[in-house]
Length: 95
Image (cartoon, rainbow, N blue to C red; front, side):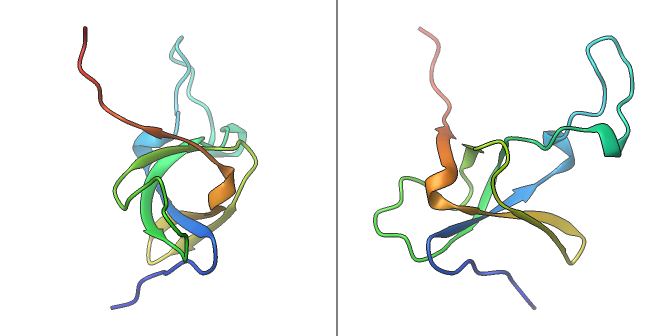
């Protein structure tokens, strides 16, 4: 079994179909070539980072034009520098 392990201060994110918009609010289907790159993804692996504020499985928001995309064994991944992560998506209780 092969797995991707980020080096240095990089984070490996997985881009899934649910994170990609395929229709507009009016129901117009957007072709893949015109779609905007998603800005959030799930953390798959973390490189050599001291005291990261994230963990494997977290959902994070990253800078719009950040990272290097690649396909590996049928999945879409994004290598992003840790410094380009903007926020972690957390569940909170309603007040």
